[in-house]
Image (cartoon, helix red, strand yellow):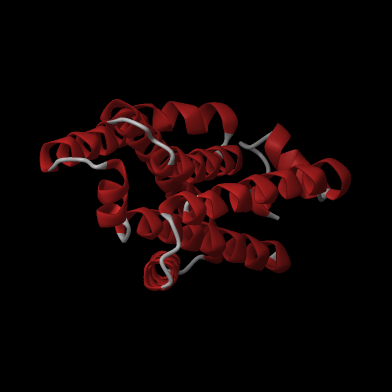
Length: 207
């Protein structure tokens, strides 16, 4: 049981770091995106409204989504949508497409945020002591790492279209890797948790 908890804690910590890094990747390169697309201040503000709208809409439905598919699947879904939103932003060819891409980015961020926090609460319950602050520390670590990479990309004049493509590819590979491991060598306890989440140990879904 203790080993499962440690693996769950590590898994959730990595997800928090990925979320922080992905969002920082977008935030630190807003000026570069604006310049590349030739957006006015008003068009940029409209796009940012799309980000907020997507976030709010996803928050309204995130609870029902988690109840239906579970926190593990919701985390994978949120991470893939969030990382897929970055290339969409980079390859937007108009203000309208830019708006739609930021809606996708907001949806992915909110789904991932709710799912990872929900599962972090379960892991903390399994430990029986406060560990939640450590998860949020990993979000900050991921944000710091993402901002550092952004600074390097900007200093070496790497186009946004090249830079933003990498996170999407990494998320796709991570998702495929988890699917392969889950189908071939998932622990019996983890499979039981997915079948009967109400009776099995909830943190097993991360093992």
